[in-house]
Length: 112
Figure (spheres, rainbow, N blue to C red):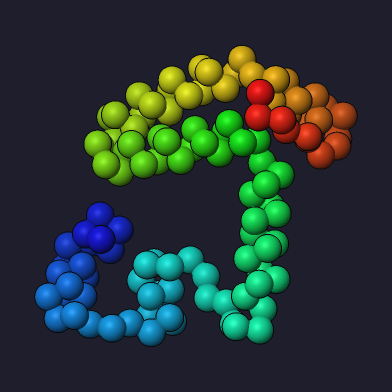
């Protein structure tokens, strides 16, 4: 939490056990979005559908690099990013992405 919010804000929340409203959590960057109950299912499905259109190997690599960087530091995270980039450049999905861009169409990724 200290990395995300800064030491003083994290300590304030943890030491005081302060409860935040959804609006406060959004304002300090603890959450990214607020959904109303009536639209929650629709909006989460839209997010899931957008994510499902992305290249699965790229998504996996982004998560791996981000998590490594957070847990082990920026140098290790950048190392993982470089390794993943080299691997991704050789995939069928990379070729599909370039071809789709050139043909001005949506790519169809297969996770290969």
